[in-house]
Length: 163
Image 1 (spheres, rainbow, N blue to C red):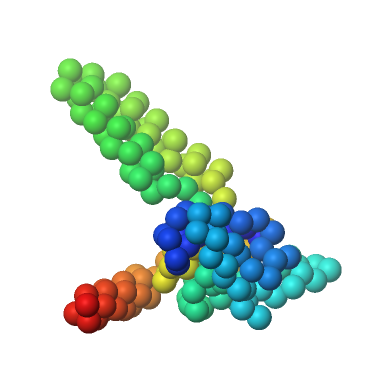
Image 2: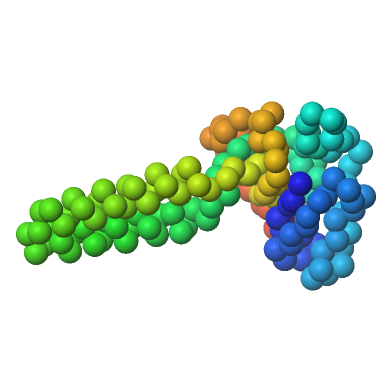
């Protein structure tokens, strides 16, 4: 099981592999060490790989399944396809316009089936990858996301009011 997370100490992007075999996660930027909580990772059995029960970076138990693909790149592909089809439409190239739109859609479908899924923490954004990691969790839930976003906003307001 692998993880990519923002260090709570320095906010540096950090990656670690085979976390089920490690007692702690260490940040290479600030040397902060995060202890992996007991019970956060269920050990592998003869038939199943190790299972995650909660986030190892923060105390959250709410995780969701998503594609392990940068959203900005996906939106960029769609925007470029749309812009190129608009240019073709402006030159009255109807076949080229629809060809560009269909090619953009085909790229999207191919990426959807080729890109693996990952598990993401609602609270801290840590991403977990590995075989069978997404089996026990569902997709994105806007209500849960909004709960964590509002909680972070209130904590930020309380911190700025206290300073």
